[in-house]
Image: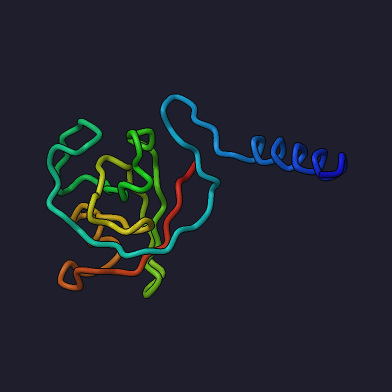
Length: 130
């Protein structure tokens, strides 16, 4: 192996380490980006974040893939229904083990801001806000 190959490998390894997400205060920070997934609704109660909510609260449950160790609890999320362009803001308060990576489960009142409960499933885009 040439010295240039070794040098290139070490440079690439160092660059990868600096580009990795950082874990601060238990949250794994993912770059701000819009996610597209299924939006469903559920009757809320005591969530994985340890807080009890009501169906009138604007909360969501995020997939276990993102929830991790709960570092996103109480983070704000902006959600958009792709079919009608309605938007709403919510707070992460629960984990959704049955959700796909970019899917969210919403409180009934939040779901109703974006669509009709009888629809049951919406296609939504969402991302964490500052």
